[in-house]
Image (cartoon, rainbow, N blue to C red; front, side, top):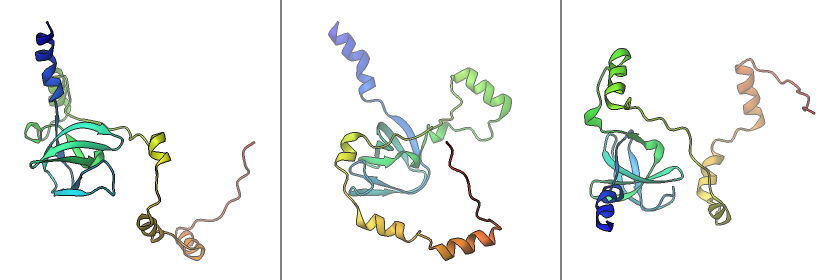
Length: 157
């Protein structure tokens, strides 16, 4: 009986979902932006996606295994994609296969308590953000160009 259960559940252990990179992406050693980059994957690279962790997905691609940002992937087998499926033909595909072939991602979880407790400042990333800062005069010029004006709003009680 144990052998039968092992045989039945073994494919689930090796299960990976086919996906394709939608843009060039860095395959990281760990699920973190500052982790070591293993290889650069070009756009439209086929990968096998496995576990997810926050906004990252563990994948196998080109003989390497690592982590990609979830939003860099399109799920499904690119070879099975049907060009021009709309309307009635898509409805028949859903009825036939049980899937429209479209995957929707609704969001990414934030940091957990352990990650927040162990967070360290990253001075180089903060310096990048400083490049996007606007001074008061620049913001006022931008608002004037857009014909925007200041408006006082009462604080809700």
